[in-house]
Length: 192
Image (cartoon, rainbow, N blue to C red):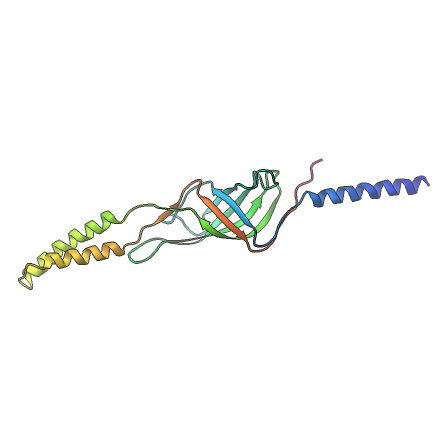
């Protein structure tokens, strides 16, 4: 009888521990949105493939296990701005780490990233316009013996300058939204 009683108590303890372990897991279904802020800036002028970054999960998780969690990621692809080429940035979100150190691989896609231009092309456009005006004036006077070369050169330089694209930066603290591609399950570490 004592053996049966010990066995029942042991089984009850294992059941309670197992139920507690499952209650401690964090689960989010595919399609859920995670909100975060970048810990360090990422600039398309200097970013490189493989560059590591972190971001901290933000509201509305202040009362959930995601409070204090952070995400590890890396730059998946980057295109630097240049003449006629728009800058682009693609981020990969690799891992979600909870405040207690529990972690899980993350399959999520960034759907929104707060950015600002990291410069202006007005100076570049003005410089090209002035250069075009000088070159057009010299060509117009020496080859075509006309005075309209400067105006044509100015217009050509301004068009080229306007076509120059400008890099952007996602500053420190930039708001990020990501949508889970696959459901997320984080088994929390057992506390003894």
